[in-house]
Image 1 (cartoon, rainbow, N blue to C red):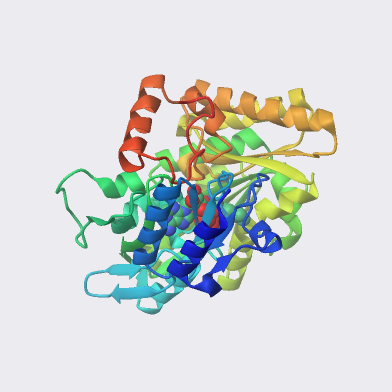
Image 2 (cartoon, rainbow, N blue to C red):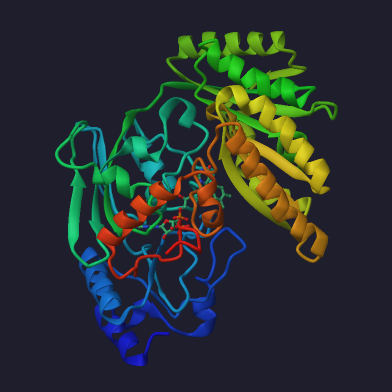
Length: 462
Ligand SMILES: Cc1cc2nc3c(=O)[nH]c(=O)nc-3n(C[C@H](O)[C@H](O)[C@H](O)COP(=O)(O)OP(=O)(O)OC[C@H]3O[C@@H](n4cnc5c(N)ncnc54)[C@H](O)[C@@H]3O)c2cc1C
């Protein structure tokens, strides 16, 4: 626990109005989008990198843990406070410092909401592609720390592919810059890439230089229904292999579809077992041609329904339904464990078939949906915490799913990170030597282990 005199020192750094110590206020920062909770000892809202540096120096002096936090929408428990620790909320650092049309670069603070940045950039005729479904409420800092992805990653890649450089306060308090404002740069180790996806365990990101793309002149959206789940999954890899180059290729199984059916801007026949949402970006003529080719190809693959959005409003309706899947699944059961596994493209049909088998074996509904175009399937195990057999079965189902994914040469997480929820499973993917090397890196950055401890590494690890 933090002593009163330490709280007073934190107050002196950030100002009295920028620290919360009352229990009911601290509770508001005890969780993220998982079911994990831990009430922090204090919540601070720093206003600059210099203040963060002073806070981290205090943490080293007194040994209290610090957990950075953006909007708390993370899905692996990364922003859940370490016991007895301080939550460092980055929302005051929310300025878009620069959008340079000439250099096609934006410089932002970490607390900027992703959707706000995307809109500001588009006003200038440019495009910041990463589009997590949480874009309207998550922060760019959180996106960097988790290497967030989204539907258009199939064509444009993920957050990592747009970060040119960072300002970082390292756990011992020094403020460093990584990378450069240029499109290329190989001077020294690539610390930028090391920090991206490091889940707030190696420092606090305080400024981000982002590469921008030209705004695509046209986009079309297709909704394609299949009578059979595996047929839809097979179509995904066939579309990609056929060189039809979709921008986004999203998948929903029947459980998912049933939860968002009412929101879709058209009637979806009940006999369809899976839906693909496909976007195509580019120049208008090319987009028309590719969209028509994809529609034809899907019909040849057995699609029972192919609808092209006629207006931007219809297209938005389709993508809106996609973005609310996660909360909508609570209609099936009050609790869910959300995993975001990735398998090689050829293994998607085997994965979706095997997930149905796990659902039958564990007697629990399992919904699968998500970014099928890059093999990243969101798997939600749905259960009721008040039913002890369901609670136990849900955790067994997660183990089954991870074993299955490793068997298919996949990875446990494509974009949500390890955090607290997947730390116990790390050894299913990384060798002991690989984990030990990563722990040595962590110690080099953070000798006193004050920076978001308890995340990524298995609880049993030294
Ligand atoms: C409905 C919903 C849909 C989602 N859809 C997607 C999706 O399509 N794609 C996707 O990738 N994710 C998705 N997510 C997950 C989540 O939105 C992302 O992981 C997002 O990047 C988290 O941002 P945040 O600001 O909420 O970060 P937080 O949850 O606050 O923090 C996440 C991690 O980042 C660290 N962190 C935050 N800010 C900093 C900083 N400035 N410096 C260092 N570390 C920091 C925290 O310590 C923590 O470990 C979704 C979540 C929800 C609830």
